[in-house]
Length: 349
Image (cartoon, rainbow, N blue to C red):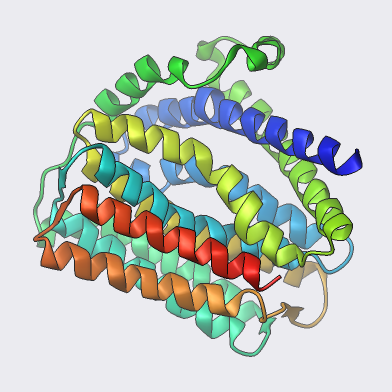
């Protein structure tokens, strides 16, 4: 009965997180980006990445601040989410509609994504995280943002209008949820102000995302104890998939509109943010508050990071062979690889 209740709590929390992020948090960030007159590239690499990666980021923050040894939950959620984004989101986008990608931004994001994974392997190699390692993650992300701002100067390319994409997403999003969640939608609407008060809504959203992420971490810990499953496995699978479902749904919508390149770029960009900022900042916070390095268990995480790096190589090779085109066969192949990963992860419990 307790396990069933925890599963229900997880489902509701995942839904509320998706709703808060999509309808309030990202909308607030979009208005901030317009006020600051940010280009779509810079807004996507910074503010929009924060919006799509907020659940993983807060789960990571809360897991390292929670008394006890729970850092693996945040790390596992981000590593598992990165695998899901890379294989399932890109795969689903390719199945929905054939896509021809602009190779210039994909090359940029692939380089920085590969670099992020190399840094992740480096930090996990000795089973502990130091301030130098945490700081290097943030430094590499700063380099990524700078490269996004200047990439067109070296490799010119054309992308879609971010404003059009956001408007079309809003038109399509209402078909995704069933009537059972309407009471939660009503309660959330009473907690937020009108769209004109987007700065206040931004901070209300932060509070909701933080609170719901705390519920996810607590639920994951309790489920792992009840089922005698390592916390890292719960994070790599259940939490990673749950926090990535909103990205999957929005990517499918965008891909159906013929903007599969946008969906794939967002998947890579979000993963870069997840690894470099979603881990770098929480690690720096805990290292400031404690003495000595942060100890992390390598057993359930290191092999997943290796697989993550291999997946990047596979995706990049597929793109080269297919001349930057993705179709149903490529999509089915990528999703099959993720299913095999899940089977492997569960079999190692």
